[in-house]
Length: 162
Image 1 (cartoon, rainbow, N blue to C red):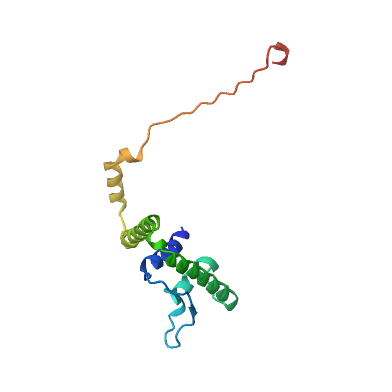
Image 2 (cartoon, rainbow, N blue to C red):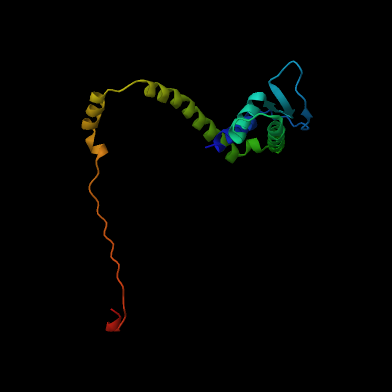
């Protein structure tokens, strides 16, 4: 499951980036804007991207020994993404279909999680649970199944070996 957010972020970057070809240049973030960490061509790495990466890959640790390699990994990923954009891979039907699938999946998750949280927050009485069980008892029952196994040893033609 950890792959989906990373692939979704990459897919979003591919879809959102401009079609203009440019030289991928690494620039430092502007001093007044603490959100942008690195800009590589049309790809921007935000503080939130780094925070998410540290949470997913490094258990939320953010000390300098972890932060620098994580930022390097994100910038390398951004370089590949920019190279893919420069190669017009964002126009490939397979890539576009995968981006659409990931975005739709993420939208379903975003819509489903609040509903699940709301349903989990609402207590259900024992009486209501019994009512639901009784009205749908066929869903909770299955026919009995038995499985028999036979082990057969073939001693061959020698009756003394039996």
